[in-house]
Image (cartoon, rainbow over all chains, first blue to last red; front, side):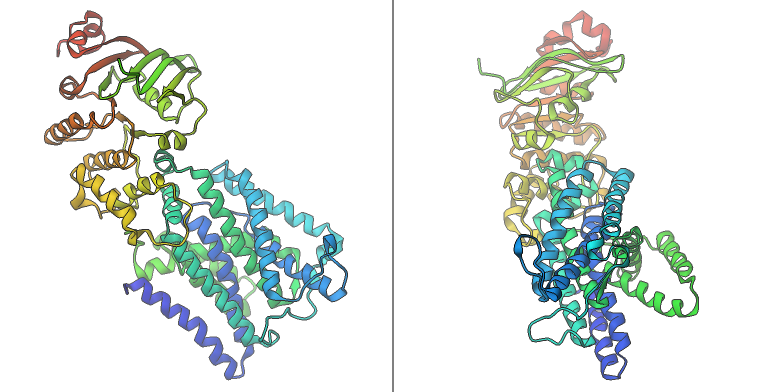
Length: 324
Length: 249
């Protein structure tokens, strides 16, 4: 069924693919890197969109999962580089696929533990308790010297993917783009599934969900874990993009950024995070070149969206969300 | 005599100094409609909420099909077959009537942790949900968002949900509220037939409906059951007339 939102989404997906390819062949690799940033932040925000958009869980702590993904990549790569074993004599690795899997599992476990406690609260308390957990992990990373502490941890050579030269910008972009595409497809499948129905109903009316015999807490916890896994993979990609991991990946600024991306693009909308990330990264690039206070203009746009376009940019273009 | 499906005994609940439920005992037998009446603030909804699990009683017990309900969550009680409707309709407002009922169907099938198959192409969810909506006469409105439906129609969705849950007892909190005279009449006929499927604990202010439907009536005043009996016994009870019915009966 081709409605306006589907057409708009396809157009965004194609643009995000075609522009960096064109830029690459025009000899402008910087724009490829910019597009890679957009893809990675999009994926992180797709993860948050699952909790926030579908489940109504305003997590102000998703930097925790982003940073855990990043540190997973950094730590595994540094052990592979030095040859020192990790815990239990396990070696490090330079293989992205292994890194993503470990990042996903680590992100999922931490999301489970954080969710177990914070999902017993709601509203402002939930926002604050997720923030508190993320800050705990942030300060832990700063004060743990083994992996760079406050200075962060370099990844000397970008990790490897079979058959692809990841050092060149375009192949690495394509890897990130493919993962974003998989993330979006999974988001769509989950949103339309029985689990997605229960999750979205939990956002709308928790008492109703419980009254038909579905436990809202377990639904939310599962959503929070899946959400954290998505964002952790994005973190691993981000570390490899910058070839550097620092505690700033864990900072509350990043948690806030992810929320802003989603609100800009459209809360709960499939392509909301992508549109939001594109606007954010491009604004940062263009306005950031003109003034250091570019976030002032971001603030103005956000204000405009919140006041006049509650469905974000996607809502503005494609109309209100519909549920069959 | 058949064992009661639902047995409430010596239930008490206080909010501060207010005794909202004061040593209440009543039961619900198979095939009967047991109406719970009383003035506003008598604690009728509070009692329903304790049975459904949204409120915790201070003392006393609630047994359903011979099993103690105390300590079970709302969701666990619903899965055991307690279907309740709310005094103020409580639905997922962005979802259509159909999707609200489909949620109940997927709960019955025990399958809310399925992540990939789209629900809107899943006939094993849609068909039972449509059937339930048809029974309450709402099939032609099934695809409208709940927020666009009238109060009366939302009431009907709640009943359709309770039906789709395959409930073994219904707790209906003022199902007639917000309905026109014609709607009330239809719903009265519908509930009359429903008791054969599962007994109903009915909280209702519409006395015509109560007198037409109830096998037994309990009168709640200030959290206490002051009388339980058949329609005729309750109508003749002087204490009930003074406390609640006044001259209208």
